[in-house]
Amino acid sequence: MIELFEFALSGNCYKVRLMLSLINLKYESRIVNGLEKEHKAASFLAMNPFGQVPVLKDKGNVLRDSQGILVYLALAYAESSWFPMDPVQSAEVVAWLSTAANEVSRGPGALRSHYLLGRPINLEEAKSVTENVLSILENRLTNRNWLATDSITIADIAIYPYIALCHQGKVDLFPYENIRKWMVRIESLPNYISMQGIDKQVL
Ligand SMILES: N[C@@H](CCC(=O)N[C@@H](CS)C(=O)NCC(=O)O)C(=O)O
Image 1: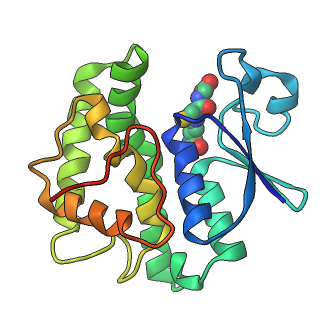
Image 2 (image 1 turned 60 degrees about the horizontal axis):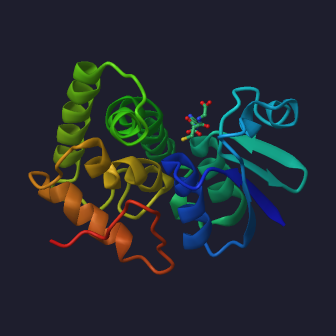
Image 3 (image 1 turned 90 degrees about the vertical axis):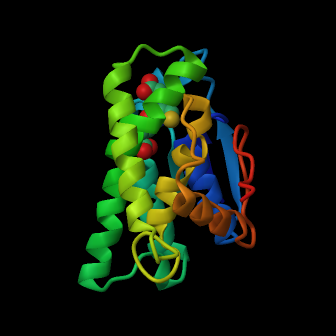
């Protein structure tokens, strides 16, 4: 059985839960006790030396990083359209995975951890990264349904959580109509699941 080591309120862990649900894969959730610093214990560091969730265990393999785990799940269990092997499409998907780990994390992700969890951040930088990435996403989604190809891919799943959680970082998505429509498309998928803090979009 697949095991997912996770925090309930982590958008990166939710990313993996959402993917598992969309492709209808059963798994066991192992909630890591953040307050007790379980993710910094030697047993956890042996799975992920960065001491971060999510970590996924499957068939003796231990995988870390939400983007890495999405790639694994797509290649091991999902239809090929989730991570196409065409060189250009594949590069496009990976570019968005990179955006999820970089700009989305440094912008909307950082603002959320500041306002929700009180983390100290460079507020001006996080706001400017957020504005830039939202405007790039808004432009990208003009006349297209999905970020990387003509169908949903792991790129959409990687970007979605911290955009859907933007309001917890005091970011208003109202001006971004294309982004909101894209979120509705994701939220309408069969087997879509939400997480605490994400209310489905109403257009
Ligand atoms: N690039 C990693 C980032 C993972 C990450 O930042 N995890 C957070 C929870 S969302 C964490 O474990 N934080 C605890 C820590 O860094 O000590 C991913 O996408 O999985």
